[in-house]
Image (tube, rainbow, N blue to C red; front, side, top):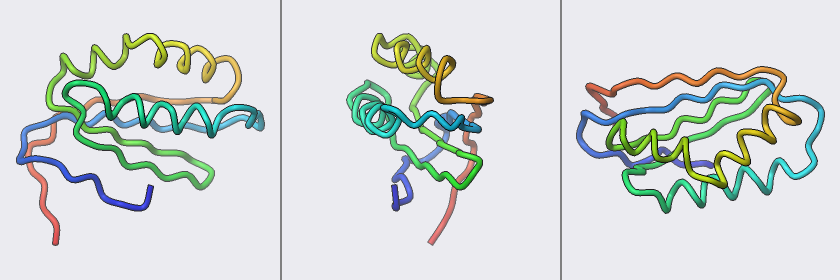
Length: 105
């Protein structure tokens, strides 16, 4: 992803997923792409930004905590979470924050 997510005027929410990968790459890229496509179809999704160079950081933006809870419980996302824990991630952390202010060029 080479763009900055267009977000509305705050407040809105950010889900920050920070991860360290294992050496198992089988199926990861396809699943990651599928999760972005699927998240974009969810009610309340506002955008996503992701970078990886050793440490991976993906930030998804949502209009409400309810939308975040619904995404966490989405069936394909649950499957990806299980695969991630079992195969792709050596460690990860999820943080949820309310965005109070944003600005840029």
